[in-house]
Image (cartoon, rainbow, N blue to C red; front, side, top):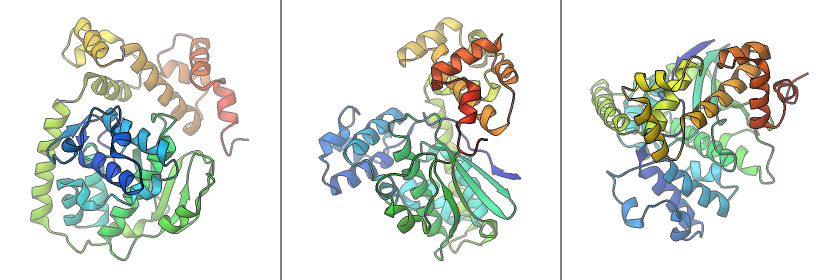
Length: 345
C-alpha cells in the first residue's frame, strides 16, 4: 500500500475563506431556509459573505452547517454538489492546471487547509485501487454525517470537472446507518453505498491518477502553488493556539507530551499557553483528551494493538486509567468497543 500524499492538517479547526460558508448559505436560501436562520450564532452578516477576502474561523462555518443541517438534515450530498473547482479560488486553479489527476490530488492534500472541508482525508493506493478515507472521528456527532456527505460530494464533483469523462467509483462505504432518504447517493456517486461500515471510504481505479488533465499548464500550476504557499503561511501564522496544540499532540502521538513540553515547542511559557487556551474556550487537558480519544480508536480498530500497549502509547501509567477514560469517551470498554464494530468477530 502506498500513501499518495499526507494531508497538511489532521484536524478541521483551521481558518478558511468565506466562500465555503457562502455556498452553504446560498444553497440553504435556495431551498427555503431564511438567511437569518442560517447565520444565527455565527457572528457573520450577509455583507461579510460578499467579501472575497474575508477569512472565517472553522467554528463560524460549523455554526452555519449546524443551522443548515437542522433545517435540511438530508441535504449533505446535494450541498456538496454546489462546490466546484473554481469555488476553491487559487487552489482550484492549481487543481485544473496540474499535469495529471494524481498531481492534482497531491496538491489538494498539500494545501488541504485552503479547502472548506471538515473531514480529514487519507489517500492510499493498493491492488490497482485508490482508497480515499474521510476521517470523521473528531467531527461533532450531530453534524458528522452531513459533513462527510458534503465533503465527499464536493470532492467527487471537482474530480469529475478535472476529467470531463468522469471517474467512476468502484466502491463507497459510510460509517453511519442508512438514512431514510437514500436515493440521492446512487444519483450522485453512480453506485449504492454500504452503510454501517468501519470507515467512510470511496475507491476508484488507480489508472485515473496518470490521466493527463485537459487544462494542464506547467507555468500556471507553478504560479498557483506559489500563491497557495503564501496564503497558507499567512493563514497558519494566524491560526489559534488550540489548533497548534492539537496538531503538535497528534504528531507526538499524545505520548510524552506534558504541557510544559508543548509550551516549549510553541515558544511559549506554560502560563501563556494556559491563558491563550482559556481565551479560546478550551484547555490543555481537554485537547489532550480529544487527541487521545482519536488515537485510541485508530490504534484499536486499525492496528489490533493490545489494550495495555495502547495505554502505554497514549501516555497512561496504567491500563486501568486508559480503560476508565475510554469508557468515559465511548460508553464501553476498549475490548467491547472493538467487538461491536462492523465486521468484528
